[in-house]
Length: 173
Image (cartoon, rainbow, N blue to C red):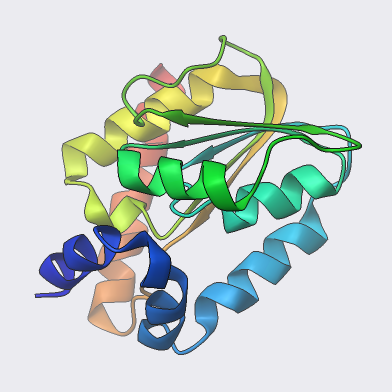
């Protein structure tokens, strides 16, 4: 049901941010502030699943060179109209794109940010996203992910086991 609601929200870029804030009870705003506090200036940043572009524009306003991609053309169009890319410091480029075909060079990004997108992907798509993210990150680059859930109880144990297995697989790459 949540996926259906999100798909509906994504078709309405004008009201997306306010409705998503209501849906997350403001957690998305806290996540945005946390991310903005963690990043420095003069970084090359790729935001995957940028939605309306609000976070991408704020990262660029801090003097970063940001490439923001989303698979939804309506969202990219909204971002381009509402968050112009002509900045005094930093750069901002919006592109229609996806996690499977990131429009940046290998080893070129200091930071990749993706908020509230990972849970919309199937498990094998999540693996493709993470594999591609590691490819485009610089050797000392960072990946910041924000997801919609925090596992508790039994599911927390299952999540830790899956994460351990996945890290083991990543080491083999």
